Length: 334
Length: 272
Image (cartoon, rainbow over all chains, first blue to last red):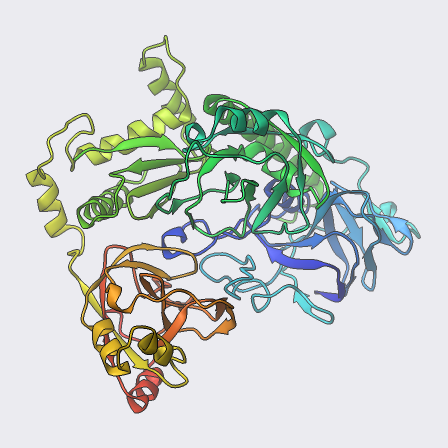
C-alpha cells in the first residue's frame, strides 16, 4: 500500500487544506494552492476533503503504485499516462499494482493533484499534513518529495471494480467525469476578479486604472509563496511606510518598485507593503494554475459580488459532491 | 475606545484600533483578541493580532446562511448588505459587551474593559526572560557592533540587557517577535551581504530593531548572541514560545550555562 516516487519532477509536495488556525503564531497556512482541484480529487476517490493529496508541478513526475488503487487526477492537465495510455482526469481511475504513472508534458495549467483512495498515511503536525517548506515541517520531513521516497496509503473504503469492467487495458476508468461547467474558469490568459484592498485609495487614479485595464505577466520569480507580476508600474500618491498587519491568500501588495505581487498559499502571515487589491477566493484556483510567462487581466468587482460568488460556488460544490457520492455508492464498503 | 472595521479580501475583517505603534493600542488589540476568541461565531477561523490591528478570518463555507438571511431581512433594505456586514455585526456584538461602542469617542477605559483585562487575559506586563550567550561563535557580529559605536562588547551586552522589549506582533516566521524599545546606542545597519544560514536561536540587530530567529534561515541581521531556548516547537501547544502583548528581557549567560539549558527539554512554558 505505497506509492514509490521514481522522479519528483520540478516540485512535488504533500498538501491538504493547510493550517488555518495558527496564523497568530506566525505559521503559514500552506496547503494545496488550487483548493478546488485538491478537494474534488479527494471526493472522487471517496475521501473527505481534508485528506492529503500530492501536488505535482509541471512535468517530469514519475511514480509507481505498489498495490491496486483507486486514484483521481485533477487540476492542470500535465499529460498523465500509464503504459503510454492517457489517464483521463476528473474521474475515479482503478490502477493496478506495478503501474507506473508518468506526467509527460504540460497540456494546460501547471499543477496536478493526485488523490489516492484512503488518503496518504502521513502524520499530522499542527492538525495538518501539509508541507510547510520554509519551516521544514509537515508532509514527508517537511520537504519536497525526492527519488525513492515511498508514501504509505491508508485503507480505502471503496471496493475494486467488478470483474466485468476489467479488461486488458492498463487501467480502468469511469465513463463520467466532473462537468466542465463546474470547474473554475481555467485558462492560459484569464481575467481574474479582484476587490479593492485597504490601501486602494492611496494609489493614484492612473494606477487604479492601469491595474484594471492593462495586462500583467507572471514572472519566473513566482512560486507557492507569491506570484510576482510584471506590467504597468503602480504608484502611491506619496511614499508611505505602513504598519505590518495580516494579509490573506490573494492579497495584491505593491513593493517600492511598483510591480504587484499576489500572495499565495505559502505566504507569510503579516505584510507591510500597501495592498491595492485582493484576488477573490473563487478565482484563486485559476491563478494557481498559471505558469510563469502567462498573462492576466484584472476585473474589479464589489465585495458583495465576490461573497455571493463564493456562496454560489459552495452550493455548486455541495451538489457536485452529492452526485459523486451517489455514483460511488455501489463501490462503497459499509 | 474606538475602532474601525474594514474588509481584508473576501474572507477577513480588519479591526483597527489606531494608526501609531503604541503600547496602549497594543493593549486594546490584546483585549480584543481575547474577547473574540472567547465568542467564536459559525464560520470563525482565527484572529491574527498585529501592532494596531486584529484581523478576524472567517470561512464563507461555514457561515450559517439561515442566520445570515434572517439578519439581512431585518436590515434597512435600501442598501446592499453582504456576509462581511453580517460578520462585522457578530464581532461588534462580542466586542461591545466588553468595550465601549465604536461610535463612542470617550477615550477613557470602561470599567468593564479593565475588569476584563484584569481577570480574563494574562496581564500585559508579563515578562519572559531570554538567556543569551553573547559573542564568539554565538554572536559573530558582536565585535563589529561594539566597534561601530566605539563601545566595549561588555557595554553593548549591558545596553542590550537593560531594557524590557514589548512584543508588538508575531510574524515573518513561526514565533518571530517584532519588538519595540531597543536603545539607539546600539542600533546598527544590516549586513551588506546576508548570511546564507543563521542558526535558530540567534539574537540580532537590524537598524533599531532587535529580534530572535526561531528557525535557521538566511538573513542580514548583525548577530550578537544566541539563546538556548526553542522559540518554535511544532509538536507542542502552543507551538511557539512568545506571543504578541508579552514583554521579554535578555540576560547574559556563559557557554556552560548555554549547553546546560539547551539540554533541559521540554522547556518551561513560563520562561526560565
